[in-house]
Length: 104
Image (cartoon, rainbow, N blue to C red):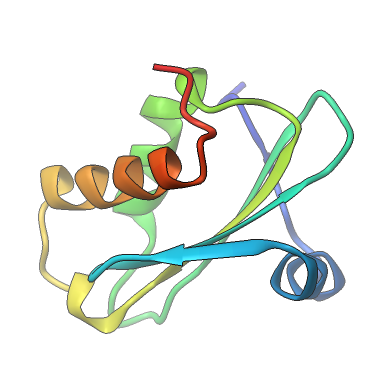
């Protein structure tokens, strides 16, 4: 188990966009919405040019520190392309702290 479930349907993504709160930095945009469950659900929206494997890995390695009960949509900005894991993880942790859903 990777510590979170995937948001799959467009309806779920649209719900988070419409009703969630967003913060952004130079590499990522993050929408967060309470889901009233004990689960963390995650969706990643990224162009094929940027690729989402680094974002997914960063979330997976930090999922134990992310508070449960939220739907999160992460959108990669174009300038994330070519950035390394450390830059991606730093951007992710920064947004999780802004949303106050990081438990460390």
